Each structure stands twice: as C-alpha cells, then as structure tokens.
Image (cartoon, rainbow, N blue to C red):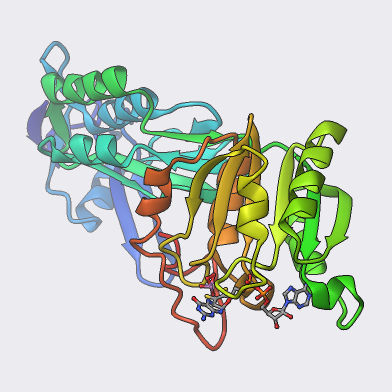
Length: 339
Ligand SMILES: Nc1nc2c(c(=O)[nH]1)N[C@H]1C(S)=C(S)[C@@H](COP(=O)(O)OP(=O)(O)OC[C@H]3O[C@@H](n4cnc5c(N)ncnc54)[C@H](O)[C@@H]3O)O[C@H]1N2
Ligand code: MOO
C-alpha cells in the first residue's frame, strides 16, 4: 500500500472503498476497492475530500480490511448462518434459516480482546428468522497484520464456531392441566389456550391434553402414560407453588425423572420446574405463565426445541436479565428480559 496524490493516481488500483455521505440521502461507497482510477474521477475524489489515495501494492504480510473481515467471518461461522460480501470493510452475518441463535459469548470476548478486531453480535439464545442480521465484523485499520487474523482463526478452531443458528424441532406435546377448580368445572381452563398458542408459534402441537385434580399419583401416572404414547415433551400447568394442594412437583418427581430444577431465578417464573424423563423434557409451569406476556417459559421453550439439554447452570445463568420490568406496553423480545 502506497500513498499517492490523487492527480498522480490515474491508472492505479484503489485499495479501499471511498465513502460518500449526504445527510438524510445517502451513505455508501462512491468508489470501491479495486477500482482503477480514471482521469474523470479526479474532480469527484477531490470533492469527497480526498487529496491523497492509498494505492495497492502486493506482497506484504498485511491484509486489506475487506479480506481480513471475510476471514474473521468465515472462521466464526457455524451451521445456519451466511455472510454478505464486505461493504466499506464490514462483513454482515445473517441467518440462513429460522432457528435459535447461539453465540459463544466467552469466545466472542476473546476475539474482541485481540487488538483492532471488532465483532459485534445480537444476544445469544434469541429466536431469529431467515435473513435477519445476526452480527457484523470488521477490523479497525485499513490494513492489518496477518498474525492478528490468524489469532482469531485459532480461537475459532479451538473453541468451535462463535455463532450458529440451531434448527428448532416441532415437538408433539402432551399437556397436563392440574387443579381441582378446573378439573371439577368450577372455573374454565385459561392456561391451556396460552400454552397452545405459544407452542403453535414454533409449529408444535398439543396432541394430548389431560385435565387432572391436585393428586400427585394421577399426575405421575399421566406423565408415564403420555411418555408411552409418544409425547416428545410434557408440560404440566398449575399446582407449582407452596400451598398444601400444590402437588405437581411431587407428581413429576415420583415418575423417576431426573430433576434439573424446581425453582428458577426468573421473575415471572420462580416456581418453574424442569426435569427429563429419559430424553423427554418435562416442564412444570407456574400460574404466572398464564398471566404475563413474557415469562421463564418464553426463555426456555426455544432452547428445549433446539435440542439443548438444559442444565442447572443454564438455569442459574438466566438470573442475569431474568427480571421482567413489567412495562405498560410489553415489547418482548425487543427488551432486556432474558438477555
Ligand atoms: N405463599 C406463597 N404463595 C405464592 C407464592 C409463594 O412463593 N408463596 N408464589 C406465587 C407465584 S410466584 C406463583 S407463579 C403462583 C404459582 O401458582 P401455581 O402454579 O401453584 O398455581 P395455582 O396455585 O394452581 O393457581 C394460582 C391461580 O391460578 C389459577 N389457575 C391455575 N390454573 C388455571 C387454569 N388452568 N385455568 C384458569 N386458572 C387457573 C388458580 O385458580 C389460582 O387462581 O403462586 C403464587 N403464590
Ligand atoms: O413463580 Mo411465579 O413463577 O414468579 O410468578
């Protein structure tokens, strides 16, 4: 790369994009990297404030910003993501399919600790649609040492992809609505419709829906029965709290399922339960899920559908950002809840 006066650059190759910005009208490259400077470009370049240009010279250990950003993007990408060609040094990474965005947050931090590297993403564990922007990456200077890009590539090689979009499965769901008040017809079931609507957003269907009284033995038997019938996920509602009639957690535990958690650091959702019967997830939903627009259920469901085996640590991690602010107008997921 060599600096030359604009007037002397005719016939030479530009080694960076040159940006034009007209407030309210336009922002983009007026001249692209690789452009061969012509006589008639000179007045235009002077108007853009360019008295000098960087001209391409091959054979150094330096990388152009576009090539560097492309290498970082390619090293970082896992399944289900795609990239667009660089514009003004920046590569944008998009979702190649609908699914759950997973970011290796620690790996991302390590990459950004390398001098002059910028890698910016959305939050991890977000549901994304095909074509949505997920991340952008660039280097800060116009040219960067090859070593710095190799350091990024080494992090991605050793840790795995920095970002990917996991496919979510359309589960066949068994739903158990507990509560004497609903079972004996004293009130109408309002919980079932909420759960079914949330599941339907992800293409999951409730194939079995059973009403039960507050009776741990019957809850246990029904869970085992739904497992035998082929349910891929079992959800119970109600009876999750501390009253003497709240027996659902006991019903779940007595199936022999492996309990991941009873209780979560998410509000609303403190009385949430998650267990696995073999590989079948069982979620115990407290009554707040019926009432609030966004709860622990919205945070956990996409991850379960993406095939994650949720651990106690995953649950513990939801505490940071797990406090819903109860805004007058709920904008979830475009808010800090669950981030
Ligand atoms: N002393 C305490 N009380 C409560 C606590 C607590 O820590 N200490 N936690 C509160 C929290 S947080 C939640 S969330 C709820 C959990 O409630 P449950 O999941 O146990 O729900 P129920 O007690 O069964 O019902 C509560 C309420 O919701 C109505 N309900 C339940 N299921 C249905 C349905 N299918 N359709 C319509 N309505 C339903 C039920 O009739 C009650 O009115 O506990 C807090 N309490
Ligand atoms: O547990 Mo309740 O599950 O926070 O609203």
